[in-house]
Length: 180
Image: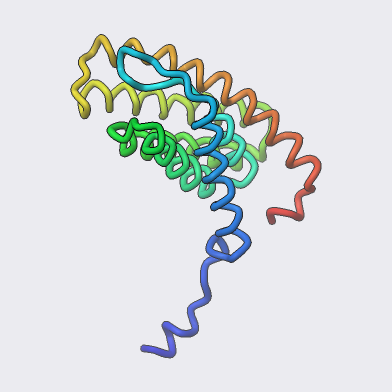
């Protein structure tokens, strides 16, 4: 039994290079979210550009990176900004956004149509998760939850555009061998 456990090799996604990359991208997600903080009074939520890093991460490094870095980095920013009540919902919303976007983009070989679909569907997960979380979990009421939908759609559009553009240029400059 012990010999079997000792012979198990760590998964590729737990390599030192990957752990370091995820740490940097998680911190970058939190930092960009933090510095672009624009409060939204009705829900005590906020607009930010953190989605640009969530999408950049997912489209460049895949669904696992999008899930981990997007969820943890964004939730950490909530805590740092004093919006800790949102952190569990943010963990799910941004983690799902990054996971779904990264998965769809990879399935479509990062072609333009796949990236657009990835951003749209991944971002929709974020918008719906925040809506349901604010309405049903946090009990803010239907009106306040609906009021934040356009803000979240704005984050999706702006963040998706910036993130996809950054991803395109970084992938092109690094070459495919860097992440395979």
